[in-house]
Length: 281
Image 1 (spheres, rainbow, N blue to C red):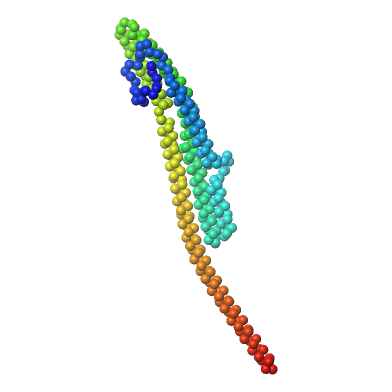
Image 2: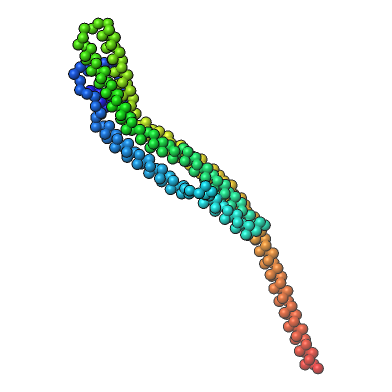
């Protein structure tokens, strides 16, 4: 009986035997493992759909053709506010520079989203619409190959009961080759269904997804690091200017207060002299 069960290793399944026909053998059928495989494929389909859903939710996709990333909108807000503070002010310059960086990050975000859709979501959809949806087709192929294999074995059994003339021997050889070919096809399809080929493929796609994220966030971090450095330098310059301006202000205040105090004392002295003069009169 030709079937795939736990007792057969993958190498045994792939390698065809020298004799593919068995006298008085039962009909070749699929065992329970393939019914379990159909359930597993259905579950994998639902999991892939869940991955697509959560990825789209992450990007918060909008239907508008002119949609803008929230980071781009934030950047525009910074630029507008920077103009409000004034181009000549430190805060205004910093906000406008930061706004430009945020706009660049927003554009990078949209590009990153498109790459993810190309390399991640489309692959998941491909697994659903191509690989997983073809499971029934594969099973039909398996059943067809098994039927042809059984037909070949049935013909071989009939030929074995005849006198082994040259014609009969050639017919037996042809049928045996056909049976071997059908078994090989069967084994390949069976291997495709029971091995981790699909899981291996999605693991590669997950790695590519992470690589894209890593590259994107590294580029974002690099741009933010540069603008942070510029803002830090602006802050230092502004602080020293503030300290300098504050010193000048303090000096002016002290000078003004001292002058006012001297004038008050002078007024008092003048007043006292006026009183003395008046008393003398």
